[in-house]
Length: 77
Image: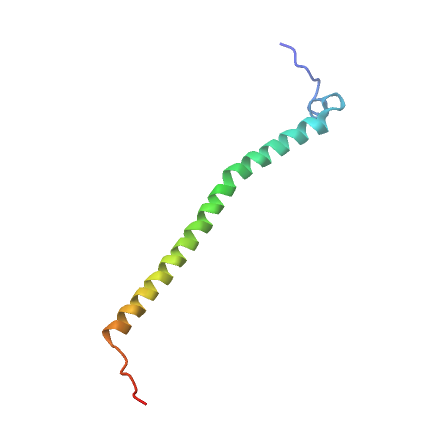
């Protein structure tokens, strides 16, 4: 079996086309990594926002319940 390139340097240079080939591989890997990571980050952000919203709604519900349980007396003029 005979290899296309004589050495590792020739393989990396690819007859002068190496920067384009390896650059395209790098760009492809970066895009694929972004396609995997961005949804995970977005999901984490949405979960945090949902948790914050649920805590606010629960605090409002408790405040309303407390106000209804202990009504303030009205002051007559």
